[in-house]
Amino acid sequence: MTLEELIERVKEAVEDDDFDDRIIDWLNRGVLLIAGGIRRNDSSVLTQPLPGLYEIGTVSTSSTCKVDLPVDYQRDLVFAVDAGGRQLQINDSFIRFAQTYPAMNTVGTINELAVKGKVLYYQGIPEASEDITIHYHRYPVDMVAGSDEPEGIPEHLHDALLVSYACKEIFALKESGVDNSNFSTMKYEQKFSAALDALEASIAADAPPFSFFA
Image (cartoon, rainbow, N blue to C red):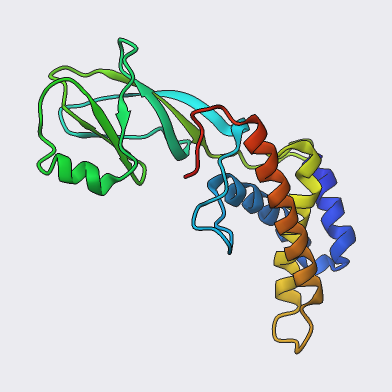
């Protein structure tokens, strides 16, 4: 579905033009949150990354132990190799990484990586700058034009996920403070949750072998 079609679907469901100027923001926020991972009430892990946002990029080391990740990096460093094609170990715990290399000043061949926020740490530190090729999941690009479509979201779930997300946010505002009147909010919360389940099932079937939970 295009942005224009998604907006019309939300308008039809809400029937209140007081919220029209915020619909695009809610739709884009829905895509961003889904891409970044949502923690379900019955789970201790985030929903899986969207395969459509899988990206390969390159960073260059410096004389320090760290380098900024690409500006479009959102989550899940899943694979990395040095300039010679040698796979590098990725420590999924920055605390363990820091405990192993407390000074983070080991000079030599890069053997291990860890991510903290938007920064990639590495040990050892090569004497000359080296490129590291990284595989990760990027931010989705916001929809702006009416013909734009949501990045990374399977087409058959555009309506169920994004229209439901926007509607639940709108009805949460409309029904706030009204006693015993959260029916529409709960309705779209349930639709959104069911669509997340369907999304997870589709990713589990199609995800590459090195794509895993955040």
